[in-house]
Each structure stands twice: as C-alpha cells, then as structure tokens.
Image (cartoon, rainbow, N blue to C red; front, side, top):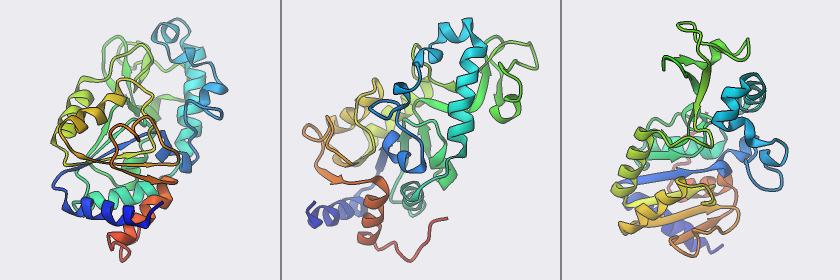
Length: 252
C-alpha cells in the first residue's frame, strides 16, 4: 500500500461536500459476526432455507429457533469495533453525511451513527404478518414462535428474507444518497449481493470519487474504484483518522 493513498483519501474526505459510507459484512467481522458466504460463512454451517418466506410460514418454529440462535443470541452479543466508532465520529464532525449498510446488526447505531439506512432491514423490530403492527423484538423472544398480542398472527423479523423485496424507503433513500454523493466509500463489501451491489454503480454514474476499504480486491476494485485501502476496516480507519488529525478525540 502506498502511503500516498491515505493522504489522498483524507484530502478527498475533507474536500467532499457530501460523503456516503456503503458498508457490508466485512465491517462487522471484527466484532465477531461472521459473513454469510465463503469458507467460514454462516451458510457453510446452516441451510439458509429457514429464511425463505414460504418455509418460515410453513415451519415457523423451526425457522424461529435458528433465527433466534443466530441473529439474536449470537449477533446480539456483538459490540461495535473501532471502524464503527470512527465512522460515527466522522459523521459527528460533518465528514460523513449518510451510511448505507447491508448489515442488520445495528452496530453502526450502537457506535453512535445517526443517519443510517438499513438496506436489508433490521433485527430490532418484528412485524405481524396478519395485522402488520410492529413490535420491539426484545419483548417477544421468550416463547417461539412469537405471536402478535393484538391478533395472534405470526411475527416476522424486519430484515429481508430471500424471497422478499428491499423495503421501499431503504431503496429510495439509498438511491437518493448515492446520487447526491461527491465521495462514496465502500467498506467491507464484495458486491456479490443483488440488488445492494448496484448502489455503488449508481453513485459512479454520477462521476463521484470512489474509495474502497477491504482486505482483498473485489469486483468493484478494477471497475469503479479510484483508491483501494487494503486491510481490515479497523486498521484502515485508524490510519485514516491519523491523516485527518482526529486523534484528539476518543471513541467509546
């Protein structure tokens, strides 16, 4: 890695009037959350059929047993890492304007980020498949599968299952922010998941500068990326913080 790349990236961040972070599973790996795909991914250990809507409705108890184990008991213990905290710090200082995340772990918000678009939804709330009322997930996981206290309908987590469309609001806001961006920063995403993978290309069509932070080159690297800062998200953001002269502040 040329040290000049960090200097240039820092200059672009300081110059940009509207900067968007686009984060994927790689930013949460260092918090102990494994990626879904790959050799050590969740789908190498679990059959993802339990996140198919038809299977969920037919076998709600089987689906919910795995959903709770993975997304609440396991993911729920994770804490933000230094990358999450530095992103939140950059937002607080006005250097980051929006975060579009493919993750459902809520770690950006736990670190203090405010303007977070959860492209694939969230595990924090549940929706009744019958009356469509929403509820806080924490209050309904003692007995599985959880049912609506209003109409006794089956409750489903508010993250996107395989056969579901992206929530309209998340898609609309993601497209809007990508179009508004002067600088787009890809963090820990390989561009393998549709339609999320299209968002960076939408930004690039507007001629924005593109920085990628990843441990290895991806399909984005040779096509739309201007600068690749290769390494773990925590290490790269700690280096960027030095170049941005933000070391007088501390993350939580």
